[in-house]
Length: 243
Image 1 (spheres, one colour):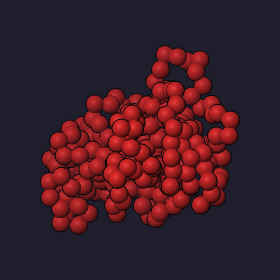
Image 2: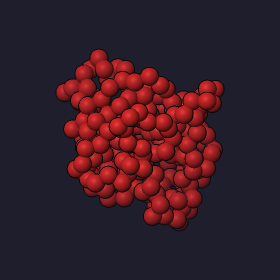
Image 3: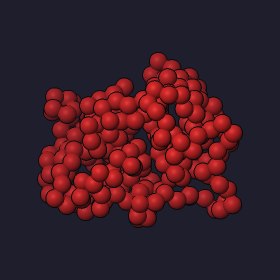
Image 4: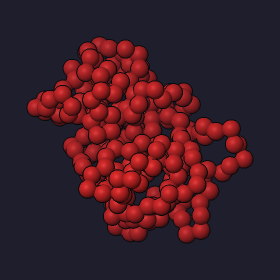
């Protein structure tokens, strides 16, 4: 289910301050989490694949956004980059297995919607393996509104030194109610961005959603989430710290 803007993840996850890298949270240092099975694309091969072409990837679930009508929408990553699977064929029982860190293999088609590159019309298989990416610090790129931000599309990211620039509203136009997406503007350096608490990803009752409702203009916070794209950076915020 798409919305004009979107973004969100759990405030209990620990922030990493590692700049512009993703690292393995594991004691098994001998495991190559970037390794691919035969016939599976590397992230570079996926990134280079033409739109509408078939793609086969292996990656690790970082968070799941929705399940509806036997379809799941999921954020994924490997140590070389991130992926977004939209409306992937998935039973409700299998959706329960898509916990953060779980490795899966996806076969589908590479597509684009308003700048967001995603995998559609896909199926998946559960595989052995577990890995969770650290947050990638993109503060400097946001401060300069760098063209390089798109390289990090769908990554699990963080920004520090963020100033809230508008009161939070429900829905993009303020027409919503409790339980709907929350939108608010922030200033990062001299740049202004709209942030979204995606209700399907981090909904009402979660610590992030509840904190977002109380934000006031001038609050200084650290934000974390996923770098969703809609005609430019449209982050899904899943973590708010500093208030």
